Length: 119
Image 1 (cartoon, one colour):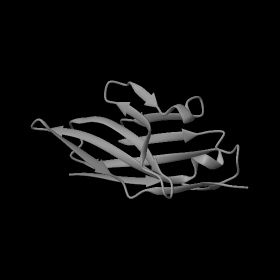
Image 2 (cartoon, one colour; image 1 turned 180 degrees about the horizontal axis):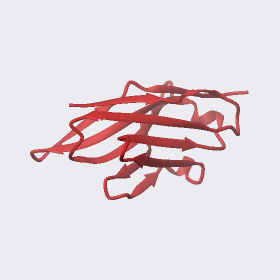
Image 3 (cartoon, rainbow, N blue to C red; image 1 turned 135 degrees about the horizontal axis):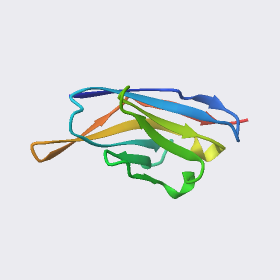
Image 4 (tube, rainbow, N blue to C red; image 1 turned 30 degrees about the vertical axis):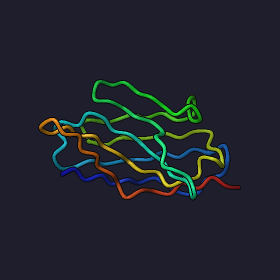
C-alpha cells in the first residue's frame, strides 16, 4: 500500500501563487510516476502534471509555463508550484502515484486539497 497526503491548498487571488505538497509513504519502491490531477465542479478529473521516475515531465496545455512539478526523493514528497493562478484553476487537486507490482498497475490517490482562485 501507498499513502499520499496532500497539503498547501487554499484561497488565492488571481495572479497569485501556491505550492502543493504530496507526501508519500508505504511501499513506494516501484513507483513509476507521480502526478497531480484536478477536478472542478461538474467537470471530469484531468491530469495537470506528471513526473516519471526517469525525470520526464508533462503538463496539460492550460498550465504550461505557469506550473512546475518536482520531487524531493529524500523526503518522498512531490510538489506542484503554481504561479500566475487563474480563476479557471479553481478545483480540488489530487495527488496520484503509479506503482507497478508483479506486472499490474496500481494507482493510489490522496484525499485532495482545494484550490480556489478568486478576488
